[in-house]
Amino acid sequence: MTEKQILISAGEASSDMYAARLATALRERLGPDARFFGMGGPRMAEAGVELIADYHEVAVVGIAEVLHKIPTVIGVQNRLKREAKRRHAALAILVDSPGTHLGVARRMRQIDVPVGYFIGPQVWAWRAGRVRTVKLRVNRMVVIFPFEEKIYRDAGVPVSFVGHPLVDVVRPSMTRAEFAALHELDANKPIITILPGSRRNEIRQNYGRILSACGRLKRGNSNIQFVLAVAPNLSADFFSASAGSGTDIKHVTGATYDALAAADCAIVASGTATIEAALLGTPMVVIYRVSSVSAFLLGRMIRTPFFSMVNLIAGTGVVRELIQDDFTPEAVESEVRRMLESSRARDEMKTNLAGVRAKLGPGGAIERAADIFAQML
Image 1 (cartoon, rainbow, N blue to C red):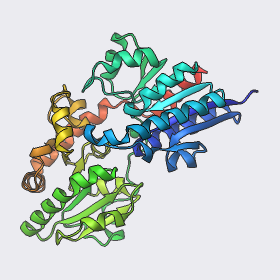
Image 2 (image 1 turned 45 degrees about the vertical axis):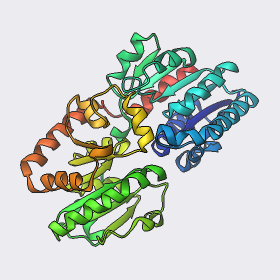
Image 3 (image 1 turned 180 degrees about the vertical axis):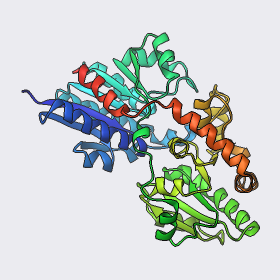
């Protein structure tokens, strides 16, 4: 059997996890002669993918923030093209990050490497014209939200909906009582879990306001306990520079799902983490902030009534969104306090989050995606 070289590329932490699982599933289908290379992070490296580029080279948030990264992104795109050509790649699988990967897709077409795309551009939210670019450059789109399938199919893009890959993995490993005991917390007192993002620049935008909100909450109720779930690509030391709220915050690493499941309420940066909280049924308030320049430009481009994935999937305002100027310590304090003080509000949100969970499809998304990409070979 001849060796198959497959490029697989992820541009951020969550994509690194998905791509790693996808590489493992593909190797099971293709056998030992499959060789994987591309861009990613530690999860992909552990899965046996030879990294030609690290996703930190291209990961950034915001339109204004991305400008200084353009030369680096182009360099990475060209590096992947050279390697795909040198290795005579049989297939390129691109995971999310359209700002980088649509350029990679164009380069793959130039050297006749077929392109499969997993977790495509959010053309339903902004930059709808990208669907035409996808049609020109991508052989097969594999999507994770049910409403995406019709959008791509109507545009003439071969597409399959496979469900969300997080459905299989988001579950706690311990009870609230066990989590509290392990981290020296009191399970009988309120626990607030904080997920401020996984990228350094987004955390710098978000975390200061979260700290101020925590200080306000603590002054109003000394029993409240705070847990910071540190993203796997960051160290707890990164947050020490942002200390100074006067509030004791317990840092945990590698225990995001346990921290969310144990929480009475979570403060969550808009992104994949909101899906994780929804799958665990954790009441939340969604926050986010970008630079003023990015906010100005995005305000003219975003076409959806909601910002968070949870509300977009639900089609209604299930969770409170505090975005940009609405994201103030006072507003965060008010919403968290409402969740803590009203069992009715918590129960209503949990019911609505269960509805979101149902729309994310059954388990096995990665396996179904792997079947599709294996067939492309």
